[in-house]
Amino acid sequence: MATRITKISGLLSSTNVVVSTRAKFPFLGSNSYSSAVASIESDPNSYENYRKSIHGGITHKALLVDAVGTLVIPSQPMAQIYKQIGEKYGVQFSEDEILRRYRKAYEQPWGRSRLRYVDDGRPFWQHIVSSSTGCSDSQYFEELYNYYTTEKAWHLCDPNAGEVFKALKKAGVKVAIVSNFDTRLRPLLRALNCDHWFDAMAVSAEVAAEKPNPMIFLKACELLGVEAEDAVHVGDDRRNDIWGARDAGCDAWLWGSDVHSFKEVM
Image 1 (cartoon, rainbow, N blue to C red):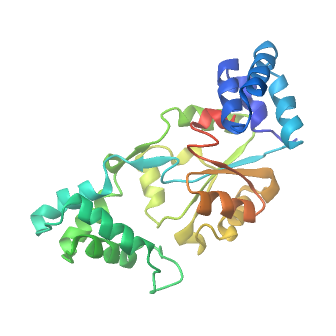
Image 2: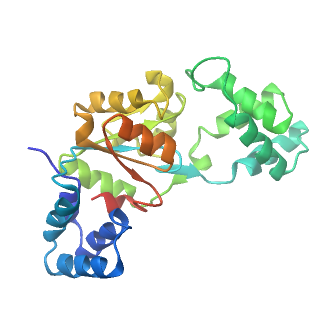
C-alpha cells in the first residue's frame, strides 16, 4: 500500500502540519491560508484532503534528498578554509579574491571529461584549488582535500533531520540521497553518523550522471524500487534539483523556499 509523505503528519503535532502548509503553498493569500490553518487545527486529518484539493491525489512512496546545501553545509566559508590552510603554503590571496576565482573556475566547463566528479574527483578539485589560490603545492591540496572528508568540515542543515528520516522509514517511505559529489560522500556521511538514514545513494561519480541530468534521479528511483512519479526530491538548486527532478518525472520542492526543514515534508 502506498504511503503518502504528507500523511505522516499524523505522527507530528498539528503545529508542525500548519508550518508545512505554509511552506507547500506560498502562493496562498492570507485569507486562504488562515482558512486552511483553522481547518487543520480543528481536524489534522483534513490536511491530506486540503492538499488533494490543490494537487490531486499525491502518493509519494519515496523522498530523494540533495546533499550539499540541503542535508549538509560547510561549517566554515570555503574561502576562509582555503586561505587558512593555504597560508603556510604561501597562499596570499584575500578570501574575496579566492571566492571570486573559485566561482570563475567552477562555472567554466570541465574539459577533461563529461563529468566533473570521476571517482574521487581529484583532478577536478586539483584544478579548482590551484585556480582559486594560485598554489599548486601537492601537500596543500592533500591537506585541503582530506579536510573536506571529515566531520569537522560539515554540519547538518537541519538538526532534526534524523528523527524525521526515522519517522519516514517507519511509515514505509523510502529515502535516498541524490548528489553531485565524488566518492568521498559515503565516508563523509558515515563520519557524520547519518549514512544509515538512507536506503540508497545516487552519487554522480558512481552513476556517471550529474544533476540536472534526469538519469541520476531515475537511478535513485531504480535503487529504491519506485517509479519516478512516486518520488519527491528536495534540493536547494532550482536548475539542478527542481528542473532536473521534474524532467525525470519526479515531484520536486526547493529547499529554503518550498520547505525550510525536513519536518515540513511530512
